[in-house]
Length: 199
Image (cartoon, rainbow, N blue to C red; front, top):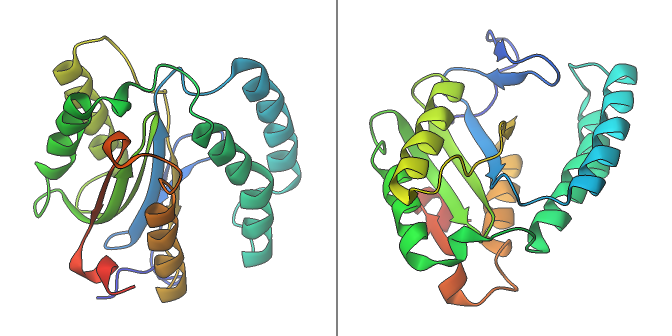
C-alpha cells in the first residue's frame, strides 16, 4: 500500500465549516499551532475572505481549485506563522522535547510518522493515522498541554490535507524540511523517516 488518496475508496468526513477528510491508510499533512500564534486582526480578515471563497467553491475541489485555495489561504497563514508571533513556547528545547515524546509515543500503533517539524509556534506533520484523525490530534494536544502545564495552549482546530500521490508526498516532505531554514538549530526539531530521507 502506497498510502495515497484512493479516489474510488470511501472518504470519512467530520467537522462543519471546512470538513476534515480521512481515508483508511491515506497519508495526511497536518498543521496546528499555538493559540496565540496568529495576529487576531489579520485572522478576522482572513476568516471573512475564507468563508466567502468556500461558499463560492464548495468541496470536492479540482486539482486547480485546491492549488488556488492553498495559494490564497494556506500560504498566507504559513507566512504569518513563520513570522514568529505569540509566545513561541516551543523555542524552548525542554518544552519541545515534551511534544516530541508525545508525538512518538504512538509511533507504530496509532500512527506511522513520515516527517514532522516542531517550530517555535506551530507544527507540521506528515503521517498515516491508524485511528480517527480528530482523536489522534486531540490526544496529542491534550497530553502535550498537560506535560507543559500552562493550560490550553493550542488553537482549537487544525488544517489537514490527504496526500494524493508520490509528487504530493515529496512536496510535503520538502516543505517540512525547508520550513525551519531561517531558524537557529536550537529553536526547532525536525524528524524524518527512512522513506522521507529518500526524497
